[in-house]
Length: 86
Image 1 (cartoon, rainbow, N blue to C red):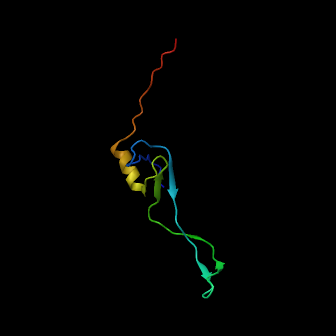
Image 2 (image 1 turned 90 degrees about the vertical axis):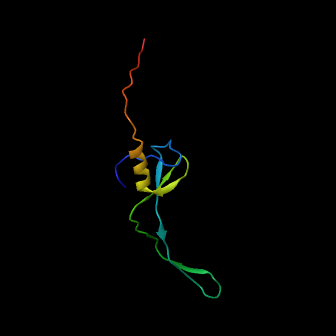
C-alpha cells in the first residue's frame, strides 16, 4: 500500500476508514465416494499486483489506484481555523 491519501470515489465522503481485502487459496483432499474432507493444507496468500481497498462507509471495493486518483482530483485542503474564546 502506498502512503498517499485515499478518497472513496463512490460515496465521496470517506477519507479515513478503509480496509484491505486479501485473498487466500487453501487446498484440500476429499474422499471420492463419501465426499468427506480428509485433509486441509495450509492457506497460501494469492499475490496481487495491486491491493484491493474497501471503503468502510459504503462498502465499495476497488483497486488502490482508484482511491488514490479520486483523492488527487479532490484534494483535502488544510485551512487554519481561528477560534475566538471569550
